[in-house]
Image (tube, rainbow, N blue to C red; front, side, top):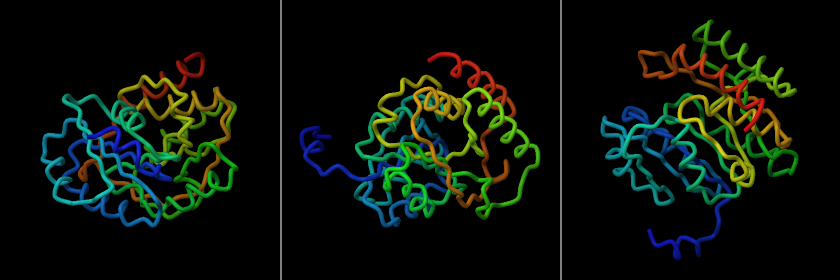
Amino acid sequence: MNTAAQSERPRPLLSVIVPVYNEVATIAEILRRVAATPVDKEIVVVDDCSTDGTPDEIGKLGISNLRLVRHETNRGKGAAVRTGFKEARGRVIVIQDADLEYDPDNYEQLLDPILQDKADVVYGSRFLGGPHRVLYFWHYVANRGLTLLSNALSNLNLSDMETGHKVFRSEVVKDLELKENGFGIEPELTQKIARRRWRIYEVPISYYGRTYEEGKKIRLRDAFRAVWCLVRYAMAD
């Protein structure tokens, strides 16, 4: 891409970062929903070396404000998010999973505290009363336990540290030196943001969780990694 031409484009309000790995069944639908949201935006899809035809499916969509960046090897969600942050040009950045669990219709309430200059970071909480699919009890217990540990280490009072819907002013993520390649990116982000004392808000969001049969990827080992990351990044960068 011509970098000079890219720099001449007006800077969009929102960069939507979509980390993708083998999501051929849902990628077209989620990108259509993102594109339909009534906000000035760019869409940055980071394909983490999918093997199921996901990039080909993206290429069929013809969405004009979409850029596809591809990893040559599978590196993990955290690595894809970091790549997306580097590519983002928007004044505000949102992470959008590709599996239809998180609804782009949440963007309006997620952006509102930042646009009112009340927040630098907004977390979309699955536990503050929005509609959600009822699924796994032990996932709920793990989420609440990790959030409790995160709050104890950071002195925050979040209700949902592990949420996939996080929104940031661009200067927030540009200030962070992130290291995690996998799902540990969520606790790493939270602890590093807390250490820098950025203003954090939470808003309720709708959430439509999926089952393992439907392609859910997070596993028990990721919870143990999250505990390690919380302690590690609470102590030092």
